[in-house]
Image (cartoon, rainbow, N blue to C red; front, side, top):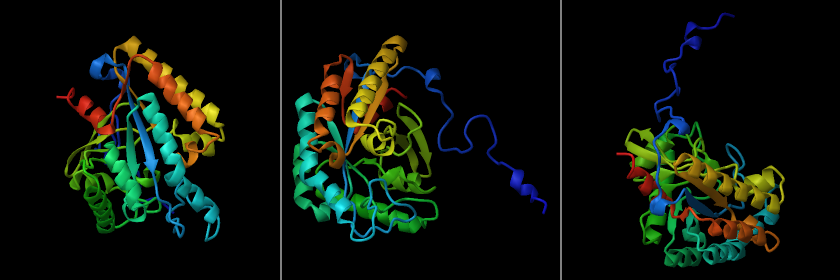
Length: 309
């Protein structure tokens, strides 16, 4: 059967991208970015405060870290709950001990399920960004736009009512998006998102409702990805993060262009007593290096945006 001629027509065929969300841009061709205080590397540590429902639907796919055995999967559910009861505070102590600023990505369901936890995090004053409703509310192709808009509105409305500082950032569960997600986020007043990981610096992202900033949160250096998916030990994870830190610092010094080190940390994983030492080692190593600017995600976005005019 002959193919329809339309099958081989590509309306966006051109040099660069096959969409109009952002311009084709190689890091080596961009102008320099200078971080405050002459730092070579901006450090974004994203601490995941998550709620995994026991009765997850797993549609259209099981969320990373989600329930893995038939209901009721208490083994995995209680391990994830451990992160919010125990591991989170170990991670915060490690960050505070190293003098490193965390940003907290929070599932809005935490406001209903663990209100005292969110109140305590709010009192700390760290930036809180939204991570949808919970880890099973995945954003995906085929999701009706009005349904996704309602989900985003529910998550943002709940978090913004529960915390004092503005909620300007977004990280989807599993970094999942539909074709409509960026437009809906911008329409809801979101300034930046961490889902797209195709760069090492912020970049402008076009939506129907104005500009959104993509602030890439590295997957390659995510603790869960390294330890659970790649089956590396926590000390191999620590070595990889230290190597990345040292390399980015050297690259920034050689090129005169600022770099971004973005770390995603899961308390139910790294807050374990047999792993927290590896995280402490990472944070201590980073804190000892001259040329590191530890900041919230919004501060990094603002510093970058101020140099783009």
